[in-house]
Image (cartoon, rainbow, N blue to C red; front, side, top):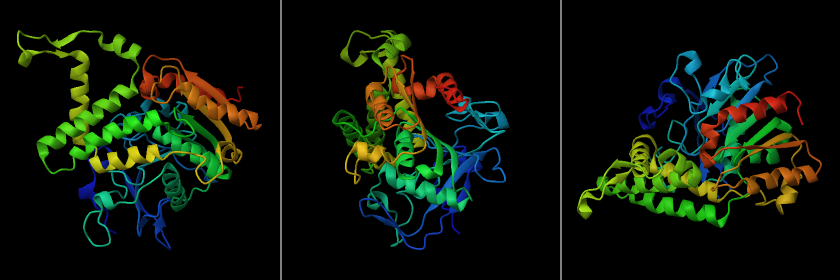
Length: 371
């Protein structure tokens, strides 16, 4: 079957990823009614499934990441969660079969907005609107396709953690341990507003004006990057140091180090991530609400029967630790087997990438039976 490799954005996954075409007896229907007649999923994996095929760890990537979560230990390029996954690490690939699929709607090989619609032209903004629950459903179909019915662990940060919440609520019988890293039970108006600002920039990126497009996506990424860090962390990293000192005129107004950093990441995103996927995923995060269709949050969490580890970040302005901890508090009141831990860091939301040693300790503590 055609794999549409010409549509995959540049990433180690382009060389290392494996393709699975899902067996869909009928079109996949998303929560808001959009349909996909066919779906392919690209994934990477490390370690081997055991005979019982019950040692899988599902890694759910955050919004702009690919499925190359690790691999440097095997001679591959380093992955975005390299310190967590590998031989002897918290997700030990000598014990577990770690698997990270590119989410539905992605741009690294899984069916997404650039893929052809039934009329033969790209879906683009006609692609189905998705929720984290939709993404979880596709992941479950994917796991079944590779022969995995139950996972030892599902773990994800940020948007990936929203999907991990859905696994714990919608399919707890298929999960031993769900690890939620830095995601609340539902997004707030503040978080939705930040995503709106980013989408206004991204919408300039689909105007077919190349100059305007690059500026739009760079501005969007800048808004995102600022929300991922904390004021204290930015002060520690940059202070008020100059990258280029100002001259005597407005034209020569100079560039602070923090501005140079934002520009650098803005340029990077235009080369590695599709603007339509950016629009799709940021809206999916807005739509995250575990109570949707389940009565209320308590009723939703009452469905959780698997073990759960909820991890907040002390300096997270985007998804404050108090909002994340609420999920653990409610599960505890419901009598569930839940642990809460908090990353102590000044790195803001990005601590899930920058303070992985603490996440490792938290996972190992729960795996060893700690309270």
